[in-house]
Length: 83
Image (cartoon, rainbow, N blue to C red; front, side, top):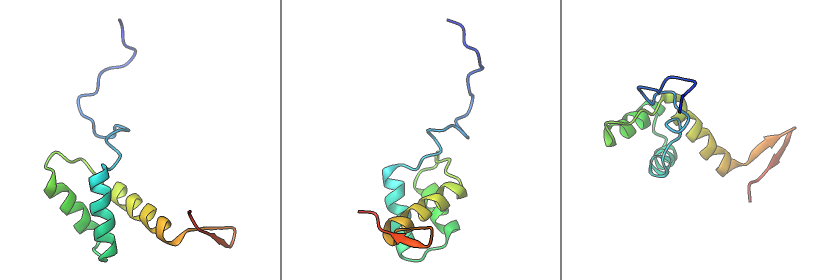
């Protein structure tokens, strides 16, 4: 079988790696509730798992998603709640 592309040597920028695990999402949401700064959330995630390749953008997106789940989305001037 011949592949059309070279195999990746690193999983950085890989789509599966760009997702936080369930535990990381829980840690991120708990720290967000406690008003912890973004850089300290990332530092905590990286300290808990040395092979972690989480980026600042991923933590930011997880915090944003958590906020949406608590506030609801604002759409065309009307607030909708997630049920």
